Length: 373
Length: 248
View 1 (spheres, rainbow over the protein chains, first blue to last red):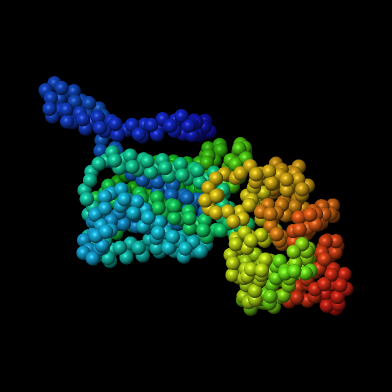
View 2: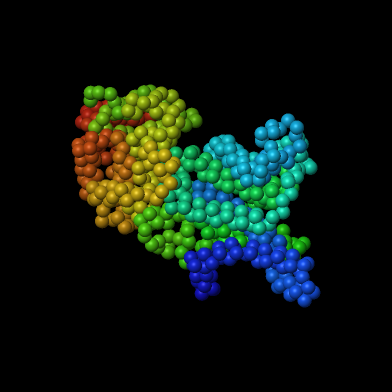
């Protein structure tokens, strides 16, 4: 087992491999474009050339669906990384983080003019996608500040339950508002099917979020967040404005979640209360971060990727039991790998223990025994 | 003892449910002083510290620090104003080395969030090293805090409290569980800080030798009320104090 883990570690956490992986992701839609070009060519060429084109199309595995799959994986990576920012760094386990996703989605839809409500101001309608997506992020972040200033005063399970309640309440509020949010009918966004765009957008946000979390961890701000997780009262007495720190990190995490929600809404072209405020989306975030390693930078990314593809395999092979499988997986994680997959590796890479952060400042190698986050 | 007090409490009262932990406690600490706070176990000394650093809400009365009312301020605001404390039960990060502990207790004073968006600066490390040298534990710079002896951890806590360059330091049992040689060191360092840098100390202590060596004035708390106040000699010969400590 050990050599295998060492091999995986050498493969995954190698800068060159990571750079190559990123390059591959950037170049992947190129194959999709080539495929589309072949399709066009096949229509306007001689039978012999058309045969070549058909062969090229069949040999090329990158279809619309491939791009969609990767887009969904990137979205999950972004969500898990964002969730990890509040839960892993600050220690506030949020069971309702999907509420920001839903708010981002609905705000974007309304700003793009999907609402049928006459009284809605024209100024806040018929925006183009880009400002509307940012608007979705701002709406989610604003809501995070409002709800966070109340719920972040709660500790431990009380905070988790309060956020769970927020998610459910928000879903019902949106569902009963027929004028603005379409009630049970939902909202239809302008149809725009451009897979490569959404692919690149989600890839870009994912790269940004990962670098952002990685950078936060190195700063004094990150150390303050972890100090809050370790000992909130001590941190407060040593001069950290814990409330401000908690709300700031909640704000940042909600903003990015809201932006992704907006992007998802536009890609999906239709949203309603149930799919935008899906409970399982929160569970996804929790499960993926936990599997990868709570409070690490690479953990949620690894966890999301593994669970996404595992789920794909299970879903396509065992359709009737795939949900049982997910439940079992969650239990297994909590029981057997509570520290996540990152703990398999000799050094808990990019962990957010105070040890790790401070030694980063002192430019000192970390000792193996201090590997837990 | 002239001029306005650095820290002043007026009728500070604190209840825990039906238990009165502090009742109408008045006190004043003047700049540059070293003041002792003594009293039997459970007399409310640590609760008073918690009230001063605003970890506990004050039910009634007022506290002034540097002339400002801090009765409703947040703990971090009080810390930013230059009031620092050590803890009876250590709050050091055991797995970090002494130097790293010092870095984490760095100058958070008045730092905006924006300024925190960078790694710790070399000046902070420089200051931490100087302080550790001053506190005579610089040879333990690479040692994990959890491996230090009780006395060395007390010194480390004192160092962490001094990192933000506070005006007033509250020391909660700075000498308990410390061997006599280290107590000498702690006494001498506190005196140096007071004489050379004009720092003010308020300290809880059970060791009367320690109090007698350092303090110019002593408050005695008993059952949450101020029992006596005066020089160490006066207090030690006060009949009410003797009764509270040893029974009649």
